Image 1 (cartoon, rainbow, N blue to C red):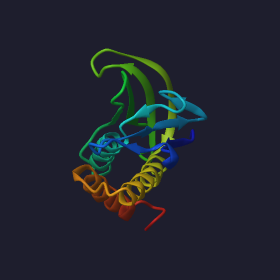
Image 2: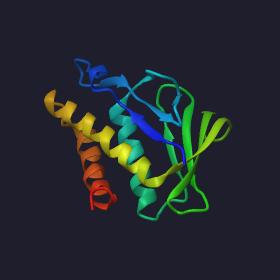
Image 3: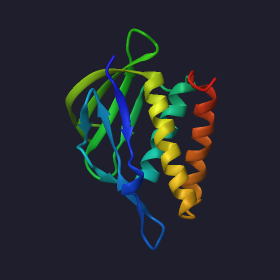
Length: 155
């Protein structure tokens, strides 16, 4: 299986006077950055959406996972492979209806989950330090706690 990492450097996070959090957030799959190295986006929204998708899939309710990026026509589509703990991931550009697959890889479901948990912990501690405990914070925190409780590494 290929390596998978959600990259969310704490040092690149910032907050506007209105409370919007902006920062660097991208994924690294088998050493390849997607959408690109140092991609700027909205980490609170993305981590909430990605947590929703991961929680939905891990609970057995979803057939696939979609991780969208807000700023740009990029998405990750993950579907089960032969082994239920293995996902085939497609790195796509375009929208959900018409897209081009740039590359594909095989990743572990547990690797995906652990990487999301680690990125969520980075984001949650940053939000706590900057007094940003709004609705998205609590949604990410709920997903974090639930996924951590079922992850093999924490059981």
